[in-house]
Image 1 (cartoon, rainbow, N blue to C red):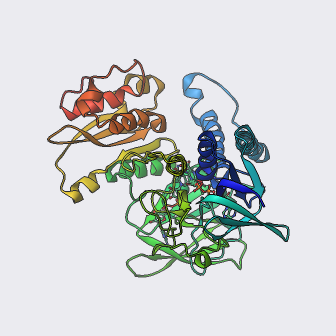
Image 2 (tube, rainbow, N blue to C red; image 1 turned 30 degrees about the vertical axis):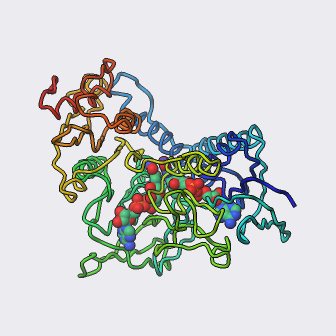
Image 3 (cartoon, protein in one colour; image 1 turned 180 degrees about the vertical axis):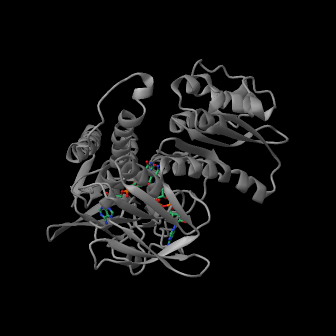
Length: 466
Ligand code: FAD
Ligand code: NAI
């Protein structure tokens, strides 16, 4: 029977980062993973493979549509999908190996198998019909999330797919019907649209990307429509007939009314994700869940059972890898007796499409609802020199600042590289900075980030290039 200071169940970005930080703090650590490879959803079937395909498909699209106007003459690009999937797999393998290396480097034991909590200080690890019980001072649950399913629509991962199947299609579907205009729908929709699929997105709400700033989402929808996306908002898919060669999806208005049928070769269901707690023995161990099936925690990530903590997708909050990572670090520090902490007001969100969408802090809708008086500063990329010369002028930067104190409350960007540009806003907000602070910070020329500075200047109605 081994004795550890900490056993982490799950090796996604929450779990493996927690393990590394705990080891850095001098703890004897083991991770338990039931999947064949380490890295969780993010590395195996989430962030990394989707970004590899987004990159490769963007290059394909650029070669076909953007090179010629820059005087780069190439013959029409041909898609080699198996090679593109191989490129994706190489990216996954490289990252998974990286996590294995980190485990070795930090002397963290990797226990392959399914973890089950037997109570304070005891974890059972089962694999291939055998099980062992591990003793440990603390346990961190980092078991992540699973796809949410639509009642009556069975995901076979071939024709009716979740994000996992959509990352591994063996041919470009002629028609791709996407259920849910959230992050997965728009990212994976972009991949297959660029590779030649006709894409229709059915969304229950009357807008895309719920949770993101409404003005940004509206512009994003227009840009995607210009690219060729079709949206059916305020609608839901209530069934898919799989009997024929093509799928026949029944679409109904969310508010009720006459149904219509849409044909598709592939249907992608991406209507959110749910916490994953199967087989963990939480009920028997007495670990309480909240009303949405997430592990309930206090502000220090402690569950209802002494010595058992939880982080990442399996607890409340945005289901994002960097949120899971930061919680992993914080909980390791708390277990070590330090003051670990996550600032939930400053967690960026990025949609890795073309253009990208990024966001941190409050949206305009949230400020209105909270009755906060705010000023808005906006700056379009059409007025940004670097964007002009590159002819990539779609989008704008929007900064929301407190009307009285000028403190920046939210930053929202739609445009190329928006995912990289958001971080200066994060740092600023982490330090409680004002729009004036950002406006007076020298930005290198010519960069797209100058648009962030100009938007900050625009908060005080003194943008220079507009
Ligand atoms: P996970 O990464 O889900 O890892 C949990 C691990 O626990 C898994 O390896 C699982 O096998 C293991 N496990 C579960 N139960 C047990 C058990 N009983 N015993 C042993 N092991 C167990 N987020 C971003 O921030 N950026 C992105 O670009 C992004 N892209 C995404 C794209 C897609 C297609 C998807 C699906 C998600 C994406 N996400 C992205 C979300 C991100 O993947 C998750 O927020 C993140 O992986 C959560 O990390 P986690 O450590 O909580 O859990
Ligand atoms: P999501 O929550 O982003 O979007 C789901 C969408 O489906 C919402 O717009 C919702 O209104 C809609 N919907 C729900 N039920 C519906 C129905 N019956 N019919 C039609 N529409 C319906 O969830 P998604 O896209 O599945 O992603 C899951 C999680 O993964 C998200 O929480 C996201 O944070 C994370 N993720 C993050 C990425 C990133 O950071 N770039 C990329 C991909 C995923």
